[in-house]
Amino acid sequence: MTQASIGAVQPVFLDFDEPLPLASGQTINHYTLAVETYGTLNADASNAVLICHALNASHHVAGIYDDTQEEGWWDNMVGPGKPLDTNKFFVIGINNLGSCFGSTGPASINPTTGKPWGASFPVVTVEDWVNAQARVADYYGIKRFAAVMGGSLGGMQALSWAIQWPERVAHCIVIASTPGLSAQNIAFNEVARRAIITDPDFFQGNYYEHNTVPQRGLSVARMIGHITYLSDDDMAEKFGRDRRNKAEDGRYQYGYDVEFEVESYLRYQGEKFSKYFDANTYLLITRALDYFDPARQYGAGDLSKALEKVKAKFLAVSFTTDWRFPPERSRELVEALLKNKHQVTYAEINAPHGHDAFLLDDPTYHRVVKAYFDRIAEQGGLV
Image (tube, rainbow, N blue to C red; front, side):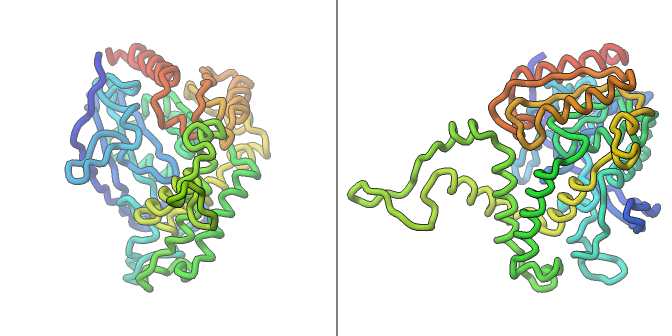
């Protein structure tokens, strides 16, 4: 079957009034989640797949918005005839609680004060997101997902689904992810957060009331992130040491403005990001990344203990040049699953694009994912 676009899509906004207890001990009493769905849910709701998003992504997984022509962040993965085939599966994308793309978050109005939540928005964890997503599944009448899938931070959520709700996940697909951040990764997140918090326009997180945005800090935070998402080889191929500015006599200019192509790229990405992403959301989500540690939470540092009650079958995918979430962290997950005699398929893809490879069109990677979903469809009688 040839690949085709899902076409025009639009989100729905689901309101929940049942209080949601959070890992922090706080409770959020009313919240909205932005959701998109693709494909058709079958009669027994057995063909549903949940896609969990990474840090700066959203519920807009696939298809195109008519008004902005914005394409879903995983449109190359999800759609008719694509690795996750919407002719067979009903796919759900959810914007997580605390994000800034339609779900309740720091920029939303706190009903108690009538002002934006700002820095007072409750701390949320990966586990909190999963519990909120479970309520979306209930809304659609889905008792058990055919698969829960995600890359990067989304992979953490998929893994947490298998641990928190073992009876509700048939297959868990964890891509370019980790069962817990390294100290180096936490350090990168802290540097990014400090860039935001020390921006004069941050105002301790209450910048909405001052009609400002900590754009400088948010831009630097994004630049730091981009450096970690790309491999050294990928950056060398894209930019090398190419310089931009030459005087009329052909000599390079010297100074502290943008001179190298890679500087121009990073500044562009940072400035663009600072115009659409919320700084408090960035702080909130990077903390959720830091906190995720099922080995410590469920088994005193032993990941295999945390996975004892898992019932899902697993696909884990890593990329050789991903130094943010390197293959050895995926192998750690695979070994812990095998120690519990759980069924797991592992693919280590030789790709040059670093952590961002999970978003790109690597043919080997897409064949692996497609083959796995084809097996799920065959075993579930969806073909």
